[in-house]
Length: 113
Length: 231
Image 1 (spheres, rainbow over the protein chains, first blue to last red):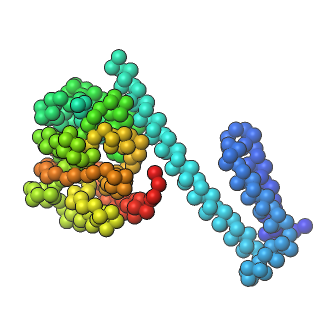
Image 2 (image 1 turned 60 degrees about the vertical axis):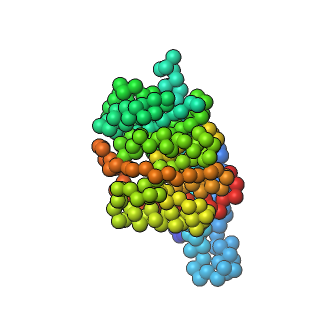
Image 3 (image 1 turned 120 degrees about the vertical axis):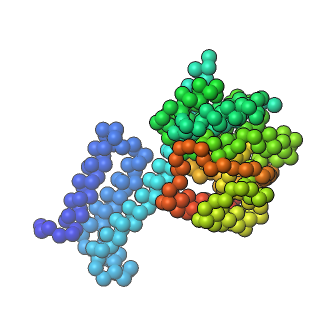
């Protein structure tokens, strides 16, 4: 076995998967948000297991250098996941705002009594 | 009728007491609420000393979210009318009565104190004037609504609008944005002339970079907001 883009990718996706599972285990990452990460590491693992799948896919998509399909996949995944995260942040900031408002009004009411 | 004057304030210790006193002088029947948006100076203390109720936000939320706090307070305490007066002294409380009249008579759901309905002494810098014209134009294009002073924060609203704003209000740069929302929901908006003064004290929050952000953010939210068919 020698070091190339495939072995590195497989190794990386295994380490990544273990890291995600460990984060969930130690309650640092909610299950809800771990699903997409686990899915990604599995897909990456399958894609990078050997040149066969990736070569075939690359052939269909007319990609000259098959490993660049891995990068394309990773990039698109990041993009989509990032968008998802900003949606989550937007929802959270709305909730935090409402919390702050309610607390401020509550404290004023308390002072009045 | 229960009237609440809401004064959003962020580090306005130099002007806040004067604004409160003026509101009390011109609208003796109104309760005055200062929403202290996480000021680091003595705004809250000065406001309390001047006899206002003070709601202290635990951190700076921005003008929209601060105003919404006031509207939420108005809803919880059953106010019929809410007036927004800025804490920096640029809105002259002498005009509040005129602005309140159409709302009290049921002729409008929101009245905007406008600098441009009639010729007033206020002459904004060229860039700001261009921005204001652009927003007026865009608003008319998108909704057929004619508002000359889209960015004025000097506003009076009735109970129905209080209820709506307490649920939905943009957290930053809300003035232009809500016009589209209100229009779509069938709220009646009226503009009346007022004089405005240059801010009495404190620093304006508007810097060149922020005005670009303001412009882009408001334009995007107008364009996307006008296509909204739900809410």
